[in-house]
Image 1 (spheres, one colour):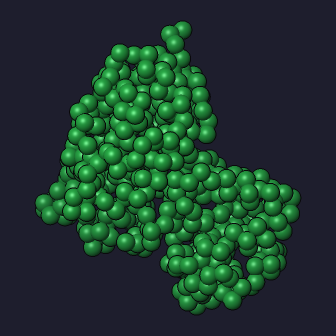
Image 2: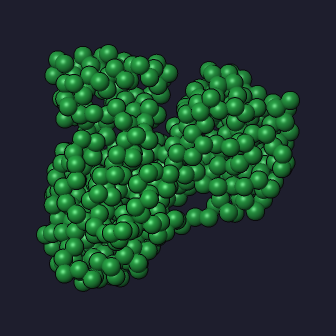
Image 3: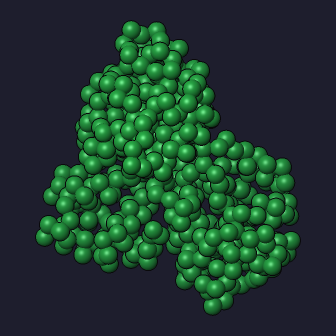
Length: 281
Length: 190
């Protein structure tokens, strides 16, 4: 569905700021750190989806209960995700990061902003192929509760299987992707063994703090929606959640080298945006 | 506010790479504008398109990194599997949201931002392509006073995309063969 882009001409920074302030006051979710362009795009899309013609109308629908707050938050946040997105990154991870993980009897992985969980299942598959799935605990967190529910079921649309199969092969998967799911009524159900060590829960990167220490953190294409201040705060949170020598993997077109927190990291691979936390100085 | 004589935005899909290399090869070393390229690309395929294009051009061609500011005399290629946005200050942003018309990058999504940010300083060039992505966006270019150069549909491998832009607008500024596009750009610049 094409975004009805005429709405965007009408949004001023002030309109958006007022709406976001309303959402924070009433629902306690703070989108003020999101980039103006991203918010413009998300809100225009939401208005189009609901057949509304202004932010004022949207606010009205929220106050009279025709649109729920959970739905609002779930539509503003971006929920797109894929399995083995940028397969060459997952190829690299298997070659360079898994050896580090193998040095631990137990290790923890955090997928911050995991959406419906495809990335988490993908990594579970690769961990299994390297014989270290049993030692892992993978946490998948997101602001959006609907997608987390979907992630917990381990059921994905069959429409994406072809693409994921290609990605799996490109990233160096050792077997057949079909080994890891069973097909039913147009959907695929991921092998339950993969999710045995997975925990999905809601976590707000904006408002909440660190909740554990991890050997590996994925935060791919999440902070691209944030302005510089919020980005710095989130990267601070992520680095605080990394154990010494732990790895952080961003989206391949993101970077944190201009952020303050970069002092505590090494850029291990620029092309794949992989960073490593320095040891205790 | 980002300042340049014009911001050159080149878009295309199936069959556009050949023409793109022709246009890039004709860009002089002292070209006073940034060039932004959005072409439909396959995702999750390791691609060195920016290097391939770079071989035809004397100016550097690079894939956009999220948050970078446009510079005069640099050519920016939208990476695959992201939408490309821009602000008035010339900062390029990426977005990983739903595909539009099955495309990501989507030409319509980008043009919407470029037209609003740069207004009459935007030159939108549409090349060969097999769907009509870009037609809706092109109306915004005109709305905000920018220029449109269309590759003559008869000169294209796939006429659908340029044809859709012609049909969406009362007047486009130029309809020319691929090899004449640089002349049209120079006419706009002078």
